[in-house]
Amino acid sequence: TGSTTGGTKGAKDFDLFGAISSGLGSLFSGGGGLGSILGAVTGGASGGGGGSRGSSGGSIICTALMEKGELDAELYEKGTAYLAQLDQATVLGYHLWATAVANKIRNGNKLALVLCRPFARSRTGLLATSGTLRDHLRFPLGTLTKFIGEPVCTLLGKLAITAVMQAEINKALA
Image 1 (cartoon, rainbow, N blue to C red):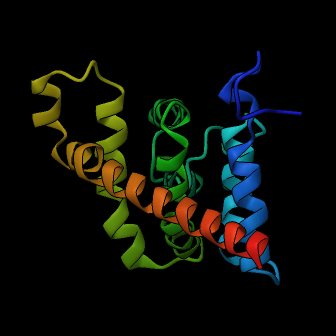
Image 2 (cartoon, rainbow, N blue to C red):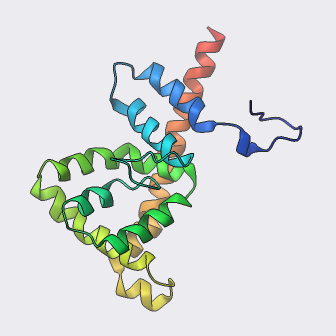
Image 3 (cartoon, helix red, strand yellow):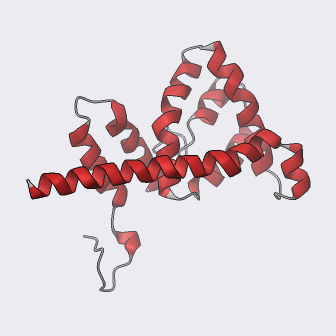
C-alpha cells in the first residue's frame, strides 16, 4: 500500500497512473477509448511492458513504423529507452493522440506513414547522438519533436490528469 503523505514511503509508492486509470475507466467505460490508452501507459510506466503491442517503454508510433520495416531496430531501441525516462505526464499526453496515429499506420494509411516516418527517423536519429548543437541541426524534425512536441504532450497529459482527478473529487463529493 502506497502513501502520498509523509511517513517513510516515497511518492514513488503512490500509483498515480493507477488512480488516473481508474478514474478514466469510469469516465470512458465500454472498453477502448482513453481508459484503454491509459492502461497501456500504466503498464509501460510501471515497467510492465505496456505500450502498444508489447513495446518496451511506451513507444507507439515508432513501434508501428518498425513493425512495417520503416524504422531501424537500433534507432527504435534508442527511442524507447529515451521515452522510458520521460515524465509520466509527457508519456500519457503522447499516448492520448499517438495510439490513433499508430493504428492508422498499422492499417496501411499511407498519409499517416508518409507524415510520421520522417519525424520518427529524425527523432530516433537525434536520440542516438550525444545531443550537441550539430546533432540538433542534423536532425531538425527530431529537434522539433523534442522541444515542441514533448512540452505539448506534457500539457496534454497534465490536462488529462487534472480532468480525471477533478471528476474523482466531484464523484467523492456527490
